[in-house]
Image (cartoon, rainbow, N blue to C red; front, side, top):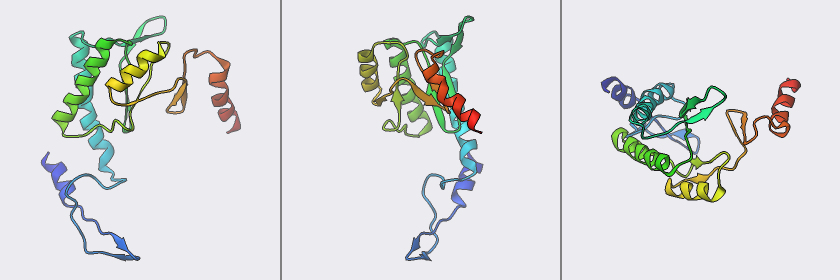
Length: 172
């Protein structure tokens, strides 16, 4: 914690007013946009969220989404500053997820931006997904959607889903 505080407290900023910089200011909180420390700090903080998910799984409080013939369990995906929770579509999972997110905010002191958050369900009733999104205080995600450039849809083998991605690769 001390080295993180030292990095943050040693930073100064100035604002351009009519093209001229103001006197240097010491920011009271947060990182500058593009700060090289941001990805590392996110990884440290995200590990706490991953640990909470691991604990919920160990106690059978959260049920993963099973993928493929081998039923590979998927529950959390994290890339850069993006986190995706994946699980069985159930009210039990929604309640555990809401509790985890609230606990994460309380422990880390960070705030989850629910206005930027979305909730979606693949192959399940739209009304249920809408109600679950409301309980989580976020928007409902439309299916199909793209994540990291990959199409996510009900029928992953559908030509309509994969054709745009194939064409993109062919064009390069």
